[in-house]
Image (tube, rainbow, N blue to C red):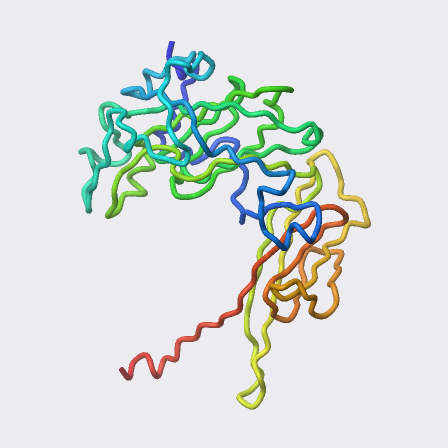
Length: 322
């Protein structure tokens, strides 16, 4: 029985289905336990980060409909090994890179697919630390060409498109104590291929990093930095400005209690503080320019943000007088 026989939904063939249970896209930052480790910026020292890069098991199928349900749970000892990140089109599994300029690799109007869509099941295992319990465990897939489906311990946890953008999934509910099995099913082509077509090499696989992060149930989800330069007149020196917007994770069943604050300070890259910390009850604030910003939400959640300032202006008179 095919892995998809029990579902009438064929997301890889439907251009209107761009994701299933994927978390909203965000800028990617690592959470640290203190400012000292945040300054170093080595995410491997964070207890809330685990890389899944390395050797995975892989099995290729000629068509997506040929992938058996057992492929996400069977023993993988006889399967081929592949490096992740990596493309199976470079691993000698039967598909090769395909270059096109303006034409598609197959004929037909969008969202037509070729007669068969090569599909590969990528498998690995992982364990989560005990101190990740009662927190949110998020799987990060940096990029998968063309589309992918994610299974954890045999449970479908999500589907994602956008082969050059990261996808993240909350896999907390599917985890078990001890070893966990992760299967990522990747289709080489999809309805989305028509949207992504350009002067390119067509590849296939998990071509960017894969990792796990652990997030506090109430904590930083996303940070947006808006940098600018203000100059009141030609006689005054320009002043750099920094606006930081903080988006928090709060469980749906909870209300954010009073007392939470967003606290940030600025410092040089050498770690010397400039000015005084900024603390606000709402997630935004402005500060003068400096080389890096350090952000803290309440206690124990630390982020480092490298910041730079630039203002671009088009002078219309100069534009048309060249």
